[in-house]
Length: 298
Image 1 (cartoon, rainbow, N blue to C red):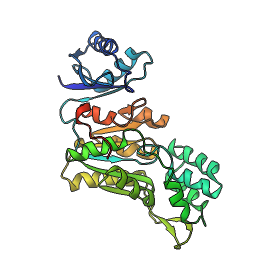
Image 2: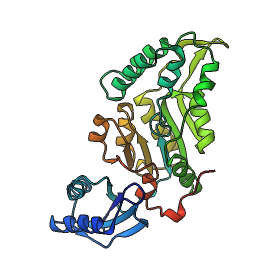
Image 3: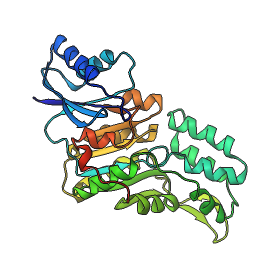
Image 4: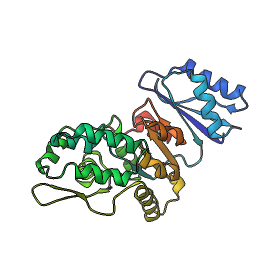
């Protein structure tokens, strides 16, 4: 079979009759779907298929689901294991927007969160919005960074995704519109080998309300994806990227496996693959990893 449809649901949510229904729908509408290969019991399964484009098969599968909370990722069967992962951080590897959380210590969280939302939806320019938001926390004591970090939580499946890919030889990197103060700590905690983000400027005691120029933005994320692929002698088809906001769209579009994760509407509508219901382990299942191969949290 030329393609694979990976079906992923929250644990216990993927039942054999539902998988059989999707297989039948693919066959009824011009495809040739084979027997399901279960990657994780009642959670993830592969359906091999031919004679349909990935986009066609995805649309058919989603229609057959009739609203069931199952993610569908269709792609060519060849080369599905990726050797480079580039991940957004805020609302992707961690559950929060770190700048929004930091703003709470300056009493401007609501104002900054509103700007963040518009930026992630692609309504306003990211670089301009970042400069505006950082200016609003000028004078914030550096101790607020540590206080914010103490309350940051990892997205479910983040550590398993990174540690499993790294254990199989992949380079894993963060590319974030956030700040290196946080990406360095997330990288160490989760197991990323490198991290790339904006640098907050300070005077040794408090924030200056600026970041080092140029701003690390949408184009920067794409540049990092291409740069790391070149450094590791990889074609872009051998790369994976994951993110949720408009500034992730360029790298998601360029990566071999670009996944919009619980993404903003503009991103979910544009990405070739998306995960709305599963956790970040869905990216492992999409690459054909079985539950027994997943490296648990350190």
